[in-house]
Length: 251
Image 1: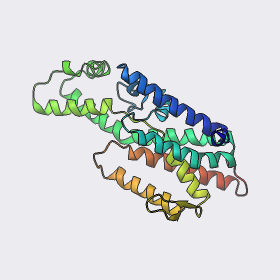
Image 2 (image 1 turned 90 degrees about the vertical axis):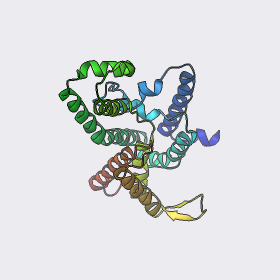
Image 3 (image 1 turned 60 degrees about the vertical axis):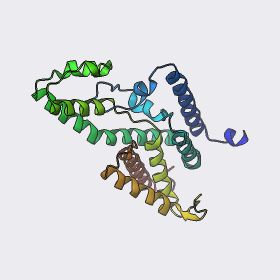
Image 4 (image 1 turned 180 degrees about the vertical axis):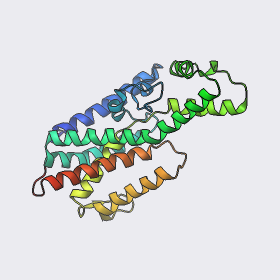
């Protein structure tokens, strides 16, 4: 309990909110209520998108993979608490949510464009997009009729992208890791396997390079690699800007 009590305020509150949202998701899902779709992040031109999801998606995690929230909360405590102590609550709060929003926007950059292209294609084929979106939003995909396999493939792709949901604090946390590596590049971090020390600039740098590679080479997994890259980029830009405006004590 003393460890939890000693966490800085914003980090502690973020930890509590994430855990509570995870538990709430477990409870609501068991009762047949899909809060993940409601609060997770959809593409901005999806019929499921609502503006508040730009924030709420950061507190949602997959209930089918406990390591998702566990790993994210470990990063929040390890790196986030340290940055909050040197920056203060206000600056850390701004940094965290800026990275999370940046992750959401970069994640949208390609998916929303793909969705728009499919929307235009289906419209050209004579489909009423407004009616189509209404059926998708209400879960009536089985009522959508098509006359040939090509239409069917396009409709399925459109449906998949429309219901695609991004969840997790990873985007904001990649910003935190990037910021930590910029400020403390030579701090040694201990790997678990194998248990050897490695400097932050190498470990976090390699992790970011992997995410960039993964975002450019689709591996078919369900991880939003592009969101991770977006969060890291925002984190790097913000730290560089703060260092430039106050070289001596920018926090």
